[in-house]
Length: 558
Image: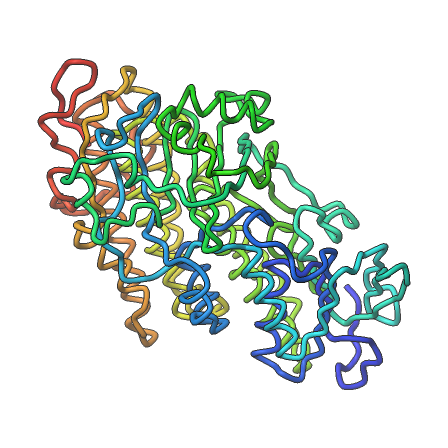
């Protein structure tokens, strides 16, 4: 680790040089300048601005942390409300092989939950972010290609060779941040790439026009389930064994479509062209295929990606470099965590830069933030890894979704909403609660996997609507993210949230054991020991549906 010169005596070109002017890089530049308007920030971006709308980049859906980051931390809510689409939550249809969507089991909300999120046209948003960055004084150099970089190679500064319009120049910077996505410039330079065991692939495309599930049925009762009847604004997931298919509307009157699959259960070679993807869709989701395959839905683009999930050996360094966004880690598009992890990593980078520019010791914080960030990554990865076979199980998957949301809203989301992501004292105080929450989650993911495997016969879709809005405590957890709490109240909130996780874990373990007494508990019983027998926390309809059948036998199912 090098010694650092006094920031006041710097002779470099900028304080922070960001490689990549996409979602991660531009939001970081805005956040840095908003927090410290005197900071000299430069962004270099390969693409020329403005970029095209709709078929520009994948990753259009946001969830609570990312949405809060864009709307409130960066102050961009007016743009989101007026130029993007308010999202009607996640929605899941267990529709493998079906055309009668209104007779499939549906999981979602009947009305909007209190904490908002949005569907984002990435081209439109990144154009707006570029304008905002420049208005804040960021030196945003689009149509500029990085040709080489030297870390800490110029009197304690980093040096980056750039090319614009055939002309090369060298930029010197005190801090260097890799936001170049999968190009991973610092990652490649320092050999930081790290594979993980999540074997999943994706193929996606964008089409003209809006695809509305409401148009697939004329059943007034089914249409009236949602208020307003706007299922099309949800991130709609069409689920089957080993896969899910997304439908995400964009404000530019386009629709984003994508297949995400377990690589062993659905090889990428069966969907790596548009023609193959449509054939795959006709086999597995014929109702969706019929709606998509219409003349008005002209094809805009088609892309695919093998084994998209990856880790990273290091993302924050005491040598004044960092990685953010996909250049660091990427999990899975299910639950849309990409913008969440941008929010987390950007906030850590801002804190490190500010400590350095104030002349404070920051290297120990880089090490702490590295451990915290990778812990968030590893815990979130557990929601996806080896879980794709569950996706077609209309009994277990709805319970998994409730559990996964609860885990997210119980721990990580409250920390970010409360602005306590860098509050080391509070995080240290709450370490036992975070450890218990992590242990509960890992045990629950294993139980859910075993539960699905034990369900050897498939569940016949029964037309139920599993309305998350009507689960009172679930609705309240979402609302409570916006509460302003002092230290004691925040600590109690996290403790209460983990208690909620324990109650839910006990309930789910009991349900699983009712049907499959031989299932191992994966240590859940020990984690729950000493707790009183919990009361059921979900409406009885969630798991006692008399008309639900597996094959032809009645069963008590979710």
